[in-house]
Length: 392
Ligand code: GDP
Ligand code: MN
Image (tube, rainbow, N blue to C red; front, side, top):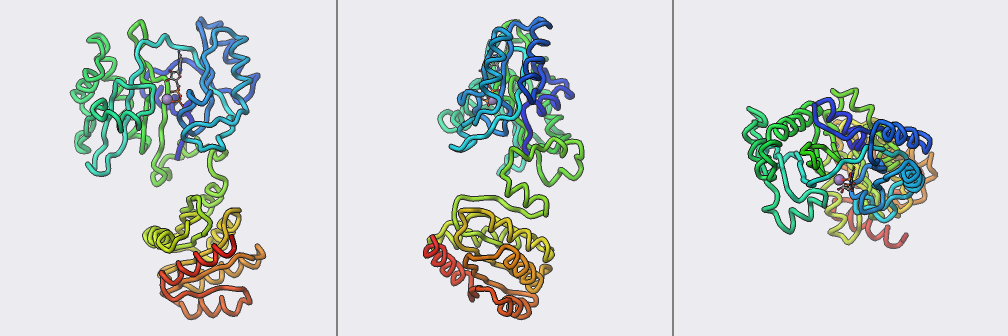
C-alpha cells in the first residue's frame, strides 16, 4: 500500500524526524490559507507540491518554489487538477487532487536515505548516498559505489554505530553527526513499527544553518500486515489506484492489471505465474495477473470474472483452475452466473482439473454458453492465443 508524501511526513514527525513546516490542501482556497499562514509565520518562501502516488514530480512540473503569496497562488492554480506526467506515472499521467504547501528550506546539500528489504540478504538494508535529489535507480546503475549500505541484523536491529558510519559516508559535519544518528534511528523505528516495505528520503537535506530535514518522503507498507494497522489502513487513497485493482481488493482477489489482451483467471499465485509464462510462450500477452485464492466462493469468482471482462483491452479469457479447496463446480457456477449477467461475447478457454472436475464441466456445457475446453495447459494457451488473435 502506498501513501502520500504529506501522510508519510506526519508519520516521520511522530518519530522525531525533522520535516519542514507545512499542511495539505485539497482546494485552491485551502492552499492559499496555508500559504498565508506560513508567510505570516515568517516563511521566506513556500514550496507547492503535487501529492500523487508517484515520484519524479519535480521534473514533471509538480514541485514549485514560490517567493510570494501571489506566486504561491499562481503555482497552486497551475498544479492542482493538472495531469502530472512523471517517469513513474506512465504517459497518461496522474491527476493532482491535493497539494502540500510547505515552508521552503535553505538547502545546502541534497542527500539520500532509504530502507528496504534486501531479499537476497534476507535483511533490511539502510542505504545512504551523497547523490540525493536525483533518481536513485540511475545512481545505482551508473555508480553503485556511491550508495553506502548497512545491513541490519534482525536480532539486534539498526545500531548507532551503523548510523554513524552512514553519517560519515555522507560527509556530514562533526556537528551534524549526532543529529543524523537520531534522524536515521527515527526512520528505522518508523519503518519497523509501521510494517513498511520501503521508506525513502530523497532528498535528505542539510541547510545552510546546519540543520537536517526530510524534504521528501515515500513510504510503502506491506499489504499483508495491514490487518494489524487499522490507523494506517485509513491513509489509503483509492483515487490514486487502478480502478479495477481497487474493485478486486474489495473481494479479496489478488489482481494486477497488465498490458496484454488475454485475461487470466487462476487459483494460486504459482499457477497464475506459470499461466502467464505459458501464454507468453504461446505468443500471447496476458492482460492481468489474477489469483482468486484457494478458497474462493462462487460470488468471488463471479466478481473476478466481471473485473476481467471490464478491462476494455481483453480479447479472450483463459480460466486455468486446479480444484482443491476451491472446487471446480463452485468455480463453474460463478463463471456461468457472471457470463450470463454480463452478456459475455468473448471467447473463453477453460483448463480444469481437480476436485469435482466432471460436475464442473457439466455445469459449463449445459449453460448454453460458448466455452472451449482444453486438455492441457499448453493446449489451453495455444487455443486462447489463437482466439485472441482472431478477435483482435
Ligand atoms: P519528487 O521529484 O517527486 O521526488 O519530489 P521532491 O519532493 O523530491 O522534490 C523535487 C526537488 O524539488 C527536490 O529534490 C528539491 O531540489 C526541490 N525542492 C523540494 N522542496 C524544496 C524546498 O523547500 N526548497 C527548494 N529550494 N527546493 C525544493
Ligand atoms: Mn524526491
